[in-house]
Length: 271
Image (cartoon, rainbow, N blue to C red; front, top):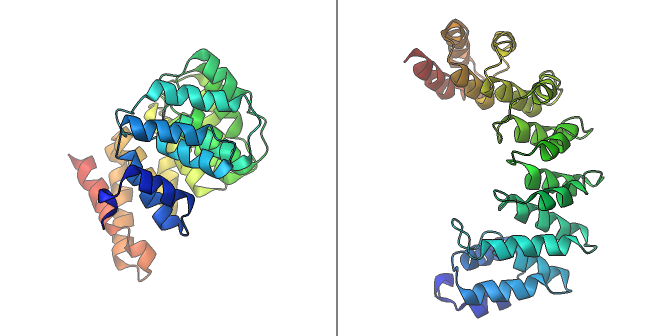
């Protein structure tokens, strides 16, 4: 029988005994598609459980129940912050922060300050989840925490935090620009690219020379093309066309695979 025809009660029971990640997430997804009072109350009950497995199942369902708009979103957000008042295991804490990240568009100052209390966390996975919770919030204190994370030793944290201040907020000030400039030469390609996009989003004219340098070195990628189309400067066209010819004639499948992206960028820039 199709999972869509299962009762919600049956899916909750299956979740407690899932043997594979695939069926686990299929069951979570199916319940998220059922924004009704039974699913909400059952998931809420799970989330309040003393059992971590049940707690995480409940949180995963609630944080995207009904997708958009969320079902009983205010209660779900308050539950997440209520759970933050108690000591939680690493996996529960991760799910709480990710859940807040899915529903952080109307957080109060009190909520934001509670998240900031965790800014000194050492675990990379929890830190990554905390960045998710703080990203997209137009609040100076939240932004300052993200700026501090752009200097982290772990490239994945620098990358995610740079994306957070560069792409997910519109706030533009000297601290954000300096933080992005500090990552323009990052050893991690993705982090560097996110910094370039963030500066392009803020129409920082100085980024033009950095983009030219990247194209001259053949260090391009989807994010660099995004920055180019944000700036919309036709001075990039000769270098793009040169890279296109190189890519077309390159026997390397990876380089050759950029042909369509280069063609698309050139086409958009020529309009």
